[in-house]
View 1 (cartoon, chains in turn green, cyan):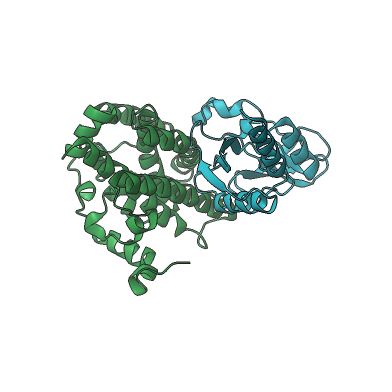
View 2 (view 1 turned 45 degrees about the vertical axis):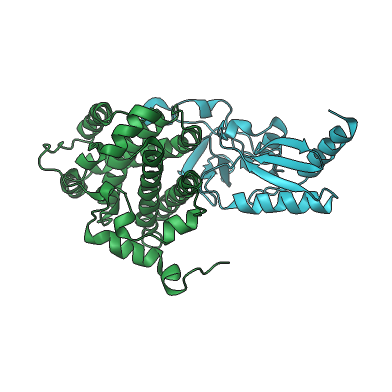
Length: 252
Length: 168
């Protein structure tokens, strides 16, 4: 792998994380616990769709084979998707969706912040645009985590369960592979070990404030970045790609 | 720059100033601060447009209306350049735009707040003035509203609900 290929893979993975988060959050539309949260989830999903479009268009440009954002999104199967396993986890209850949003967005906003000064100019521009939305999602989700953790016995029990369930999937966020190494060396992408420490500190503080226990780092699941996914991704793709799968090349 | 080009640029801006934002039609896209540049390259006019939110569904509609409006204004060779940097923030909304928003019943975004960090408790509770009666005795009903860029508020004094254009 060379630095150009690493950049394409990295940008595509970022688009994959964003589009899968968008799919998951949009599942709440029509099912939100209250109108405000319904709109919040829909709004966040829309931000992620927009970010995914920018990442995919950029990946297509870098690749130079004429693939559009739609081609990259709709004409790849699971093994070509490089999103982390955390984002494809089922939503669970509202608390679990919030917990996942906090765990992922804390990572994502740190990642975007670091990328905003990458010499890959377009990546830096997309990151600078997306960081504003990411910070806003994180603020909203963090406030909910505090309310649920420090809320009733039931809300505390549920959101603690969610954090415990999801913890196994947080290790992958910081698992470095060849793409990450090249990105770090050539495009000033963040060192994932450093990012992990920052993430850990932020999450630890937030959980303590929410009267929640931080789970111990045990065995961590991984593989999503390399295309080895859980069964859940298949269902997401089948729904998202149903039009292109039924009418290949459909266009309007 | 030759006079002809300057004239072309001026007439392009003139047309752009009359294109309404599809979601907040009281604002023109120039008031909203999303038209970044007008460049003239021979007969060609290149308009730099910055999207507000990444996923703003109005982006394509706006780009389409820029092309159509310029063409019906006699400028046929138009292309759009999407500008990401520096990113759009609510601080790009002009003073005239803010006043138009207020008159329309949408509380304009506070200036400068967009530069601060949006995280955690660092952000003080914002005091938003009611666009109708002017009091700051208002209450946030929901951080989310009819479009991605607005929050829902209620005035405690005159009891009117109103929207607030969020700082981002």
